[in-house]
Image (tube, rainbow, N blue to C red; front, side, top):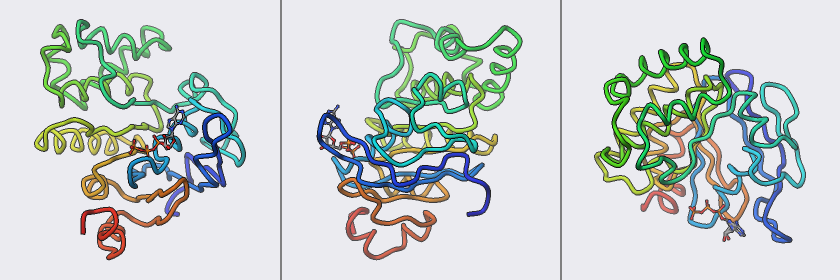
Length: 238
Ligand SMILES: Nc1ncnc2c1ncn2[C@@H]1O[C@H](COP(=O)(O)OP(=O)(O)OP(=O)(O)O)[C@@H](O)[C@H]1O
């Protein structure tokens, strides 16, 4: 591991009702790293993410964030500790403006902190500042995803967690969204994402986990995973 992990999950299990979906997953994100979770439909990728972000309980194992045990922490607590989440799909509100979304992301902040965060976000995504008064419904899918990410960055997180950031986007917009995520990482925010588009995810991250049937099948630096004949055959369409 190149740097201390900011997120470190050991042997976690979780699921729904009596149905265990995640069967003892080890996963970490080093400080400054960008990590993807890939794998087939129904493999449990989103369930791993929901467990790590407190949306569902962790049944066993431990989760640490910045060295502290957060195994039983709820989502709001994790957000206060510096994990910010970009949910799957249309998490923006069509009738609301860009500025109102940024306000939503700033719910934890006092005025000075909010101003600092706004400057950080404008610096990173200059287009946001140009569109403050624009309603979401008039924006492209890629721009809407930019607003979702910008809203999540308002708390100045250490770790940004994204659930399928490219879902439903046209191919040209997929590259645009990965470019935004790369900019976030360059601004010293660690990244953890679940992605259906395994090839793009591996192309745009440092390290990857392949999850299948609730277990980690492969873990390696993303370039190596992308070149691995089995991974290619099974998960990257040959
Ligand atoms: N809220 C839920 N209640 C009960 N079962 C669920 C729930 N959400 C997911 N599951 C089940 O858990 C399993 C793993 O689903 P999950 O969404 O984690 O997979 P995934 O790898 O993210 O899949 P996809 O790529 O299709 O989103 C599936 O069998 C799914 O039906």
